[in-house]
Image (cartoon, rainbow, N blue to C red; front, side):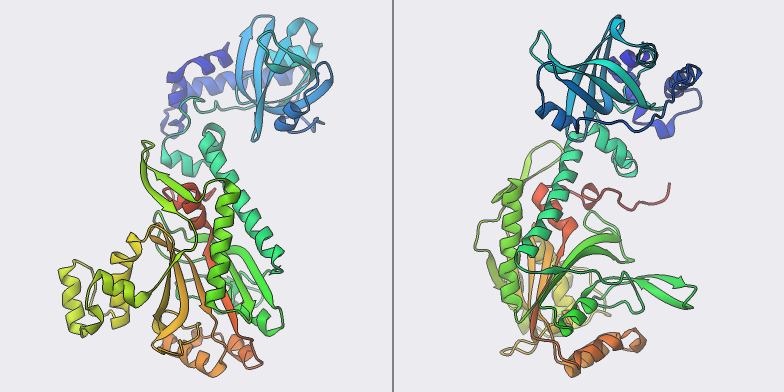
Length: 505
């Protein structure tokens, strides 16, 4: 029987994972043709191959939990294993949360159920009504009496033993990855748990979740290239937001003491294993707090998430062969170090050098800079290449140059820096946090300096809102995708985004 062949023939399944490259006369096409014949056979017998609603006892996991010998049960799921032994059939029904075996004796089926069982394939969605029973080998199962075809799968699934290994297929056809690869299912369930727990953590501390515009007249809150669109009814260009910051601060002006938003940001920039043009970001603001208070909040949150997932405080990252490549230690308290001290440790005497000497030193260090780079940009490049990439355990980098963060308060002891932290874990920034600038005149001055000749890019409504008074506040951002990578050991941002952006085929 075709379903049995699919289950036992690895060579057939290996062809399935390369379906995009198949010719019109491939073995895959032959398997699809057989399935379409079965589709027509069901229709010829008056059976809808894409059935209707089916009342179930619960998910497969709930069906397993409710097991009670002899009692009636209804279950539905995808067939992931199938053995045809003549009058006896054994199959596995599976869903995202579990699997249960179904035993079918064809002599006990009605006419329609018998017609269904003769046309089954691995991958079909099947509804089963029957009774709980335990097999001679002790496996809790369902003895099926009535079968309902819920969906006839027209393409064979990937090999259940080898899964989908080709990254191109895993990312472009994530549904196949999730069907075939248990680790991928586990990872995305972990991501869902992380996002849910972030919300609960903040709500328990009286933060209010809000929603701000994702299409904005002015792209503000970060220095990045936006995506542009046009609204016909308003006759104006709009931008997909690069950050929600300026709207969340308007809510501080309005009197909201603690707010957060978990949503998408969009930046029309490069794609890499750490960057996706569409990404998930948490931003939170706390009236009357500062960057130090926010750093404690973030430290507590991430340690709580690691504990909630059962992965901390030591998180191992592995290579493709399963070997441990690095271990991240989340044990509190986390290190705090100034930007200046870290750069000086990497390049002793750096801040005593003049601009030309810094350029020369970068050439010696084989750091790629141009004559267009300003002095603070050169220093930041040194930081990113010689400091940031080597910080594996959590480190709050504090007192960064004011030019890098125009929305943060100046440090009172050193006005060349701002009261900011950048949390680095596993060689990349996970979270920035600020003591937010609430002086409207100074904020306007610094944003005008950043905008240069592009003064039209200023959000004048935001600047006006500050003139009504915004309380001192602390703010944080957390890149959720990078956070999930760190907590789960995923090597690429594409592994933690269900449908990452890829070049068109």
